[in-house]
Image 1: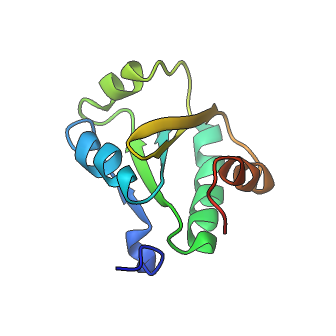
Image 2: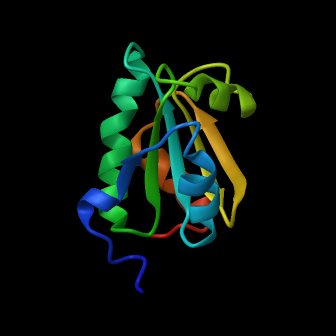
Length: 122
């Protein structure tokens, strides 16, 4: 199966505390997963969302974008587990391991550079 041939709607998905191990950790053994921890009340989160989505579509399946709404369910426990102090925080998982992170909104070129530095090329 060609992992880069995913449908557009499969490139971005919502996940949660309960599903994280399977949807992100295990899945990242097959394809890099960028995880956006965000909140609806957070202006930088709302600024970063369209940038991340645009980059995910541009890369066409070279990585997947997982979204975690920190105010839903037990998701704040997940944010605490990864030592987050503010939102948005973005984590990159590759081969089942956390490989990189950043917090706050960043411009598109910065996101692309971050991915490239971690071996995810367009």
